[in-house]
Amino acid sequence: MTASNENPEVSSEKNQAPKFIKVWDLPVRLFHWSLVLLFIAAYVTNSLGANYFKYHLWCGYAVIVLVSFRIVWGLVGTHHARFINFIRNPFTTVKYAIDSLKNTEKHYAGHNPLGAIMVVVLLLAILVQATTGLFTNDEIMNLGPLYSYINDELSLKLTSLHRQLFYWILGAVVLHIAAVLIHVFFKRNNIVKAMVTGKKPSKGIEQEKSIRSSRIWLAIIIVVILALALAWIITHAPEAVSTSEY
Picture 1 (cartoon, one colour):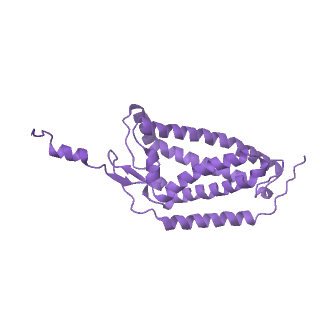
Picture 2 (cartoon, one colour):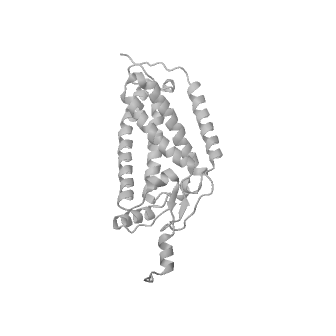
């Protein structure tokens, strides 16, 4: 029998399962994938025509609640969900971008500096896009639930913004998907899987910090409060009647 020359310690390291840390809480993961589905549903219901306007509105209501929740969660949520823990200064962001081109960038447990910019831009753009939808007027038969608070001219301007902003958001989404694919296939960093399981390999991550709890009950309370607030605003709005002349 030939004795193995392999170092037992090295062999042990090879066989040892990679260590993972919990990064994304359940509320963040549910928010992310729910927003993806709602974005698609909003586009489809809008494309199907005026008869599906009601369903398009429901998608918009859900998006407003979801994005508002994520903004609040960015203040009071778990460690990696909070804005203060992933938004970096311009110098750090530029340095990360340059290092990424060299494939020498620092690894972060949560959002990297460029990802942080994309998160903030998408949240604000989607919130504006969904909110303007509440004041829309399609000049056919449908009005947004808050149309009565503004005049017809302003409603048409907001309707135009609502439509045009969609394509800017779509462009940002395509850019986001491209960045994700680069991470997955070229940098061997499966951030898609991490957004499903909530876990990332700890190897190479500096100052790793694993969250202990998803704080589900706090998330539920916030969502319920936001949903009730939006429902109250919509149900207490005066009846919308268009002043357009056809």
